[in-house]
Length: 345
Image (cartoon, rainbow, N blue to C red; front, top):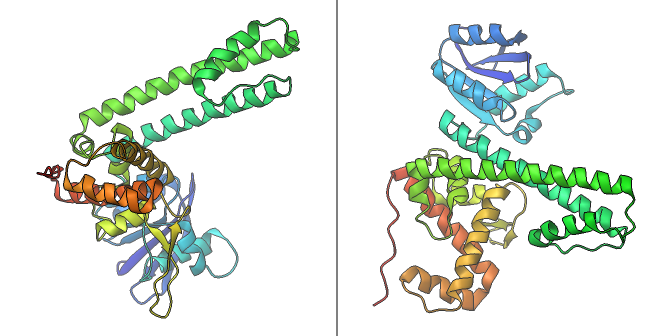
């Protein structure tokens, strides 16, 4: 085991499968370990490449292995699957992870540091509470629709109508149903209060972070988009170019090329960071909508204005998203400030 160069770990909560493959590709070790023995065992190993699937707790174990001097590779599960032989077992999975780490076409996931992990955790909790709010509002709308009570889609309309509906004695709601709807309405209000608290917390983190402040100087980038960009791009070390960063987020068209003929389609919906892309797209749409009604003030706006007239609003907004991601990548990698385009004379 002193000469091993790849340690494949199939992660779990308490029982982990550990596989060692040497430089010649021979399996030297493939056994189960518990959490604490695994930590001690990793600390006693010579420097090696520790490969794991990018799943729950992978960032924690990646940071732990890196602190011990090991190299770390987090591999998306779907890239590991083709390298598994035989049935799906922990032992076969550990071998597949170790073998996949040596493949030339593997695109590993990025390892988050503690600062990025804190930002991501707060952002994910905010999104979760927001989704729960939406689920409750949709449920209430659907239930009331069966009584002939229609509520428009806007949140303002929902907030205004529910109290009036609960107090209306002329509708067909029974006392039991009215009481249960009131409980669901109170749950919605509590979630709304929690969401506002998490939103304030995330915006405060963005205000205290220098990189987020620099990113917010970009057009169409606010505090939430800045946090998501920082978490996704890091310091640019995971990408070779801004084009790769943009493709990872999902702001580039799908390609189906063969025989030297390049065929580009629509922007794909899979293999992308949907929350980040959606946030950037909404910001870009706001910029495009305002630019449609006035003359461009600088070279960048002139480019975007011409694109709007040639390709329409949505295509122009996605092009701005692409440019924003590539600019953010360059800023994070070089540590530079955003240079505002020169005004048109």
